[in-house]
Image 1 (cartoon, rainbow, N blue to C red):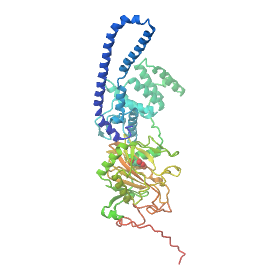
Image 2: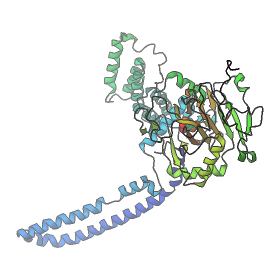
Image 3: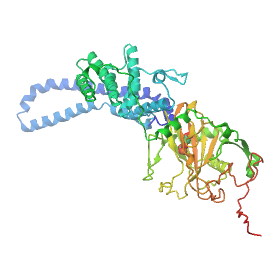
Image 4: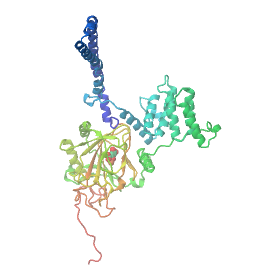
Amino acid sequence: DLFTSTADLQGLLETEKNVPHALLKYIEQEEERLENLKKLVKEYEARNENNIETGAADLANPINAFLIIKKKIFDWRKIENEMTNNGAEEFIQSVADANYGIRYPTQEDYTGAAIGLMRLQDTYRLDTRELADGKIQGMKGNHTLSAFDCFEIARAAYNAEDYYHVILWMEEAKRRNELESPPTADEGDILEYLSFAMYKQGNLKQALRLVEDLFKKQPNHPRAKGNIKWYEDLLAEEGVRRSEMRKNLGTPMNRRPSDGMGTTERNTYEALCRNEIPVSPKETVKLYCYYKMDRPFLRLAPFKVEIIRFNPMAVLFRGVLLDDEITAIKSYAQPKLARATVQNSVTGQLETASYRISKSAWLREEEYPIVERVNKRLELMTNLDMDTAEELQIANYGIGGHYDPHFDHARKEERKAFESLGTGNRIATVLFYMSQPSLGGATVFTEVKSTMFPSKNDALFWYNLHRNGEGDDRTRHAACPVLVGIKWVSNKWIHESQQEFRRPCGLRLSDAERYVGDLGGPEPRFAPNIRSTPWTYKPKKSNKRK
Ligand SMILES: O=C(O)CCC(=O)C(=O)O
Ligand SMILES: [Fe+2]
């Protein structure tokens, strides 16, 4: 599929160049075929003149008759072959085939793109008309949607039984269709879909009015008349008197359907995506940045660390991936991009899901020296052991691409997760931002309510587990849909095993880092972060001992 990744969509534009060439080749083939057919016509014409005279006599002999039949069959097959063998199928296949260098969108891409647009509309509260005008948060694009485009978006919603969006987009289709000359959509179809969606959303009177409008315009419509009666009967059942059925329509109800997410979480998630939830100055005043120099190498090349949140701690490493490294990593990942999967919490199996729309690829350090270099850097950044970490994952989001709120770590009930890796749970996450979308695409934490907009070259880091090994559910987070622009990220999921001395266990839930690699040394806010104090066991002094 193409809609799940903008990187692949870009490929579509580039490979479109090949279409004229392929079409020309097909036309040449067709011309040759028609020439052959013309030759066959000539042959037949010549033969017929002889045959008609001698043919009748030949038929008397059964052997001759048999041979004539046989010959006719073979002749006819030749014609049939020449006629049907027009290579169109092969041509279509070659165009649809990625091997030819052209990947053509499928119906699924079309639907996926439409659903992505509706997700953007919901998350960022975009007005349907403005969106159709190509306006996004005041920015004017250079394309607008026709009535037919709106109709198609509405139909994608209809197929997903999402009548909320059917109403929004069919109404827009209707409005545009009335302004267009000639109209691009079929008015009858719009009215029929719209009236059905009105009925589904609990607006019987509106449904009746629309279907009557349809009947007025198309008295021979196969369903209009029957539907009028149907809606009238339903209204009567609800105790509406006949004289009232066409009065007091009011504004139609149109409630957004609930998806898998709870309403509260969804509201928080979307508000965070719009960056509408302010952080208290009481919290922000405590934040600071420092140079991480707690490893010998870092004395020469310190990392710039910004603490962006305490409890649970998250930091941003500034400028840890160079532009050239990003370009290289993207190019390695591009041919490997595949639709991102999620783990089924019951079976542990990987599957695709509409709540995660992106494409991703894994890069092995054995294969790419740059990836090896990044892994080494990750060790210096986090002070954690990278031998047990997962390979570097690269992700590119598509139209309205997003990832609904989730945990990176496995929760207690998800026993099967990471079982095959044998390296324990995901202790920490590093998220490199490899591009900066113009609008949207933030990483948001729905429990602690923080929003982080991607900034290219930087990396976000947080611990997923408490020091006692339990999952820290305050790390629940999501990737907001990309509104305008392109989003590339890269994740490193670091695991528990082999961190025994890197991040020693804490006994209480409250044992928490105040900075990256905190082993109990002074806070970098007050002292240079030049040495990680080795972890030592210090028993509490007992009062009783003398
Ligand atoms: O892309 C993002 O902002 C977050 C991605 C993420 O949470 C994930 O891939 O697990
Ligand atoms: Fe995540």
